[in-house]
Image (cartoon, rainbow, N blue to C red; front, side, top):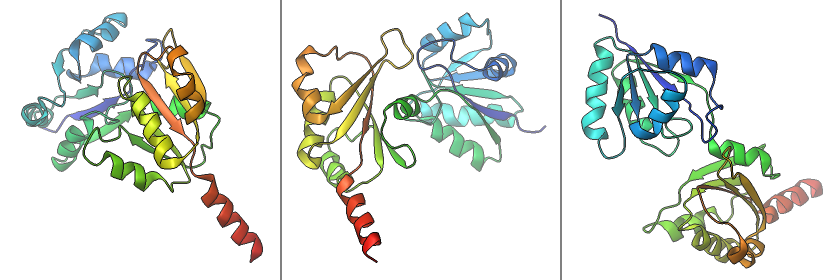
Length: 237
C-alpha cells in the first residue's frame, strides 16, 4: 500500500470568506483533519459543510500524536493539517509533523492561504523588497540579547505579539533601537481590523487612548543609518 499525502491547508485568519475553493475541496476529500483546536476549526468546517473527522494536534500533544499521524499516512490515509487561523507551520507546531513526514518519505503538499504577517507587511507602507519575520520574541531568557542582535538590521522586521506584552515590547525596542517607524496590525480581516501607524514614542504617548485589544502583528522599519552609509560609500567610489 502506498503512503497517503499530508496537505498543509491555509485557513482564514478572521473573515471566514478568506478561504480558497481548493482548500475547501481538500478538507472535504481527505480522510482526517489534524487541527490545532478542534472547537475553533469546527466553526469553519460547519460553515462550509465539511464533515471530515477531526483530530487534535497542538504543542502539548505533538510528541504522542506526531508518530500516530505518521502511521496513518503510511497506512495510505490522506491528512490535512490546519492551524487555528492562517497557514500551518507559521508560529505553530506544524513543522514537527512536516519534518516527520518528510523523513518517512511522505509527500507534503501546501494549499496556499492567509498569513497574518504578510497582510500587515503589505499595508504597512514600509519597504517590502526585503524583510525578516521574527515571530514572537523570547518572553524571558534571551529576549534582551535578541533585541540587541536586531538593532543593526536594515530590513523591515515583522513580529507577532500578545496584547499583554505589546507595550513592554514597544518600550524595549525604543530603548534598544531608538525611534523607528512602526505599524500595529490588529484583528486583521476581522470586524475590528485596525492599523496604527507612528513611531515607538508616538504610539506609546497615545497608549491610554488606543483600543489595544486582540492579536497583533508589529511591523518595524529597519535601521536607516546603515543603508545611508552604504549608499554614500558606493557613491564615493
